[in-house]
Image (cartoon, rainbow, N blue to C red; front, side):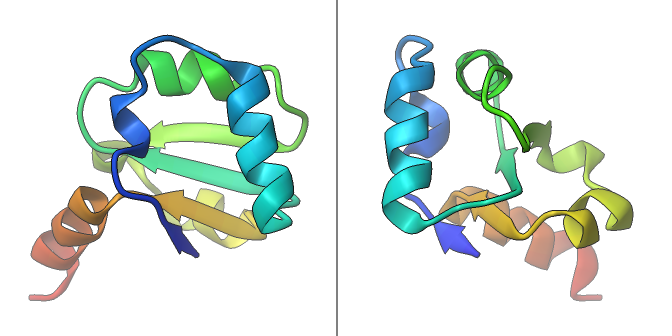
Length: 86
């Protein structure tokens, strides 16, 4: 799991930039979980093979277990802790 600060604040979609990040961290099958408006994240990730993006409100066990790597932001971690730490 990689926690990347500001990842969901991508100003414009860039598959190339996200692919470079994936290559730098050695990501294989990757799930990107975003917090707020993830339109640019989704557009950046959708053309990368074996990569999927999903909103934190829609996460499910299958997607998490099916991914080799998770890329999240600190806000996503906080939201997951808030919902599942009870």
